Amino acid sequence: MPIREITTKPYLDQKPGTAGLRKKVTVFQQPHYLENFLQSIFDCAPEIRGATLVIGGDGRYHNRDAIRTAISMAAANGVRHIVVGQGGLLSTPAASNLIRKRGAAGGLLFTASHNPAGPDGDFGVKFNIAGGGQAGEGLTDRIYQQSKSITRYRNCDDADIDLDRRGEQTLEGTTIEIVDCVDDYAALMQSLFDFDRMRDWIKKGHSLRFDAMHAVTGPYAQRILVEQLGAPAGAILNANPLPDFGGGHPDPNLVYGKHLVDLAFGEGAPELLAASDGDGDRNMILGRGIFISPGDSLAMLAANLPQLPGYRDGLRGIARSMPTSRAADRVAKELKVPLYETPTGWKFFCNLLDAGNVTICGEESFGTSSSHAREKDGLWAVLAWLNVLAISGRSVREIAEAHWQHYGRHYFARHDYDELPATHAEAVMQAFAGSLASLQGQQVSGYEVTTADEFSYQDRVDGSIAVAQGLRVVCGEQARIVMRLSGTGTQGATLRVYLERYEKDPSAQGWNPAEALAPLAAAADQLARISALTGRKAPSLVT
Ligand code: VG1
Ligand code: CO
Image (tube, rainbow, N blue to C red; front, side, top):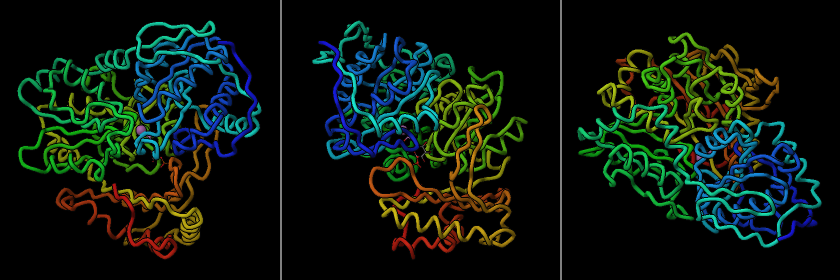
């Protein structure tokens, strides 16, 4: 199995987005496509040579092929030790944990998150660095530049690797260690949460339901919730990972998780209902008769976290992405800890976490996690809620209502317009940008505009600046309209419109979010001429 240098020609479309390189499976199946990108990573991150690399994926179609290629190329590029999840499976947070625990110089994660899988579905690759976080903007751009001029890559001929056999194998002097995908992650969760209290809570007959959506979290939920915490096997839905995710769309939100919503609002509903996405980094939380929006979940967990074993020292700070509702800001204020507002994408939290500035982070896109990892962590959020329920003896609804009563309620919704022609999406952004200039001091939907600008962010640790991170109209604490274009799609452009409205008075908090936000939605349409410029009467998805 000699190492070979293979001559190649660059593909010019390998620009990573919000979370790595995401394309149709058929794009990744083109000769040398994945190889070019991986070699660009090895070229731009020479520290991996002679070091440890973690490799895993969410189990989707093409996962095994891609992982074999990655192992073979890593060996040919002089990686000393490769740690791979058995069967090629590692959830994104579990991979982040393994990178940290093994002192690895990096990790390759094969996932397109919640995007549908299968031969006609999506595929993706993310490069994570030492410490377990996603490569930052600078390195990501260097990798992209390298991919545009690449002329050769290194590979081993006919590498024969058994991804299912636990233990060590060798390839051209590189050790390949196949590990159980759950062990280290489960141990980490045990170090953070009170497993005895959670076990008791379940034993007393409190019920929960977790939907793994035929994606990567099945084995994790099975081990932790069923085997370790004693939940009945029926508490986990769709527990077996399938290459096409069972034909479903493992995106835990009100649309793709509607069956859970129906269960939560139906008779005999379980007390805690949750779901995760394709690669296990997202979470949706529901209780009997209530949906907890991700921004609320961040705020409520932040307020309750210091009661949990791993967080007894209190919070250092809280971070949220800019479009995420400002519910967490109020908790930070009361706890007298800093609140950081970052651009969309988990990579922006990593330097803050590394510097010890924040303990918990969240995004409106159903992402929450803490300093235990450098990725968002779906099951972590579920266990955190479960632990809070177990120690407080309160229901999800009671916790939420007490929170709103104390802090006020932030109504929030995201309206997505999918698969727009790029020209339409850009025209909307331009129209909105054009409106911003004259909005200062004006009224929008009855609120006075205090800021109308484009968000940019300077990293406090490395000084780097990220520009053009979304357009926003801020009406003090009362309301906000934010717009940005997605960086994770694989087809056309996706416009995201984020609406937020604050209601302090508990007697006025009984609206449903769609009603509460309708005037702001109308204002957004008017300011950015969305329906006029796109021909769409309504968003494709409201979450
Ligand atoms: C989306 C979300 C963002 C999230 C990203 C990756 O990005 O909005 O909050 O971090 O997906 O999540 P965009 O650019 O499409 O809005 V995951 O679970 O797909 O790794
Ligand atoms: Co994901």
